[in-house]
Length: 254
Image (tube, rainbow, N blue to C red; front, side, top):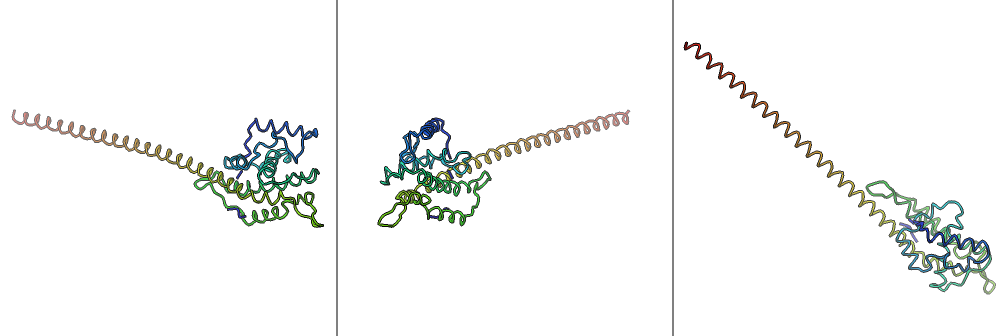
């Protein structure tokens, strides 16, 4: 997979439900292997992709504090989707496997968020920044290589051979669609910023044109007024000279 971002939308209703589920988890009433519905607000592929296209996961890379707890609604949704739509069996019940598997999934989704989000800037006119694609692809390959192993805690033994848990292959099958959905949000947001910038530039140009036209009109009026003053002064002078000539003519005749 080659990378060419993601909004953790803070809907209060979802996060209140997620917090309640986390409290229940801490009390031992739920498990990561089989999350309650409140812990998986996007339990289907369609829901996950729709949310990604809407930019709900764009800020994954900016999560601070207890990352494990804050990432549970998303990773639980992914595992619920993998079970229901890809036929993946539940994770082993050990805490080590569950934490490692969720961490692997979240790291990959965060990488997707960063890969796309880092290309998006507030700098017009392109709102685009070049990123280290080689570094991103190397990090992607490293996470992909261990996907399904859960750091070794989720591997399953069959015929004396240890194999990754099926969640890894299923997740990697789903991932290209998620990457595409994330990229669609990034490009739509970039286009929105370009449109807003172009509209702002058009407004500023219209204002500048109006100001220039008003200045030109004022200058034309000033010149016209000056021309009228000159012509009036010329007429006054000519009238004075005419009166003087007539007065001189009368004195000469007298």
